[in-house]
Image (tube, rainbow, N blue to C red):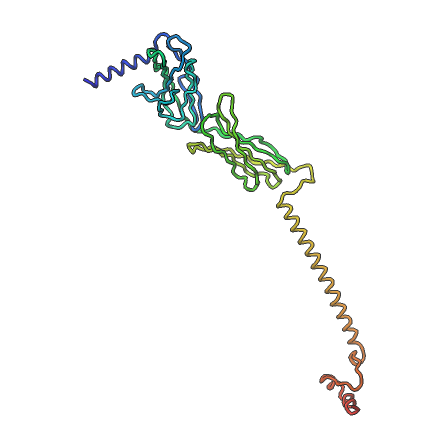
Length: 325
């Protein structure tokens, strides 16, 4: 019996919700799609009891089915909500029920409806259950944007800017540059506030390109709070500078110093070899001249001792010298 009564009450409640009362209307599209980790704003306006203005009114976005009440967003700060990334951004006092979903996740897909409550007149409480909004969450396909893209000139400082996909007011994604280790660039992150209150996040890379950086691959990677990532890669197109007086980078200067040192060292070695060869030939020539003189080129004084070799080669003279001593 209680089961049948519950079904009757549910059907009665649903019939009441699906049939809008006179003076109550809402204007909102029935379907929206958002990519995972990105944001979507659902424009919404409503009329309650033929009135266009209220004071301190309360608004709620709830998840279908109607029962039990599952509040996902509200302007009542003391009321707990099921989803922290759903936000009632419209001012309900002015009949604005706009809903914003940030950092969309797979589990956010579903059907939702709006409820209005007048804080002064409790009789004006209404569920716009006949205007359900279906939210679809798809794969993240958008990629970050990199600018400028094109040819850059060697020796001239350039700044590449990477912008995250989507315009959100949620938490900032992490934007990183990969493949910049050989470029020695400087990364700076900043954000830009848009007119609609959303934020656009950037990461700039400033560096000086050289010819050897031509065809180098640079990748901008965006990581969202849910660890969902997207990236875009570019190849640097570096053209030679018409100015031939470009100051070389540190590595080139070191190479020039090293080459100059090798050349100077070789010159010193060749000089030493030349000088050594000169003295060697000079000494060899003098020895040769002395070897061509009589008596072996040696002038001895009479009465001096001779070596054993001289005794063998000049026996008679040696004995004669000995007898005269």
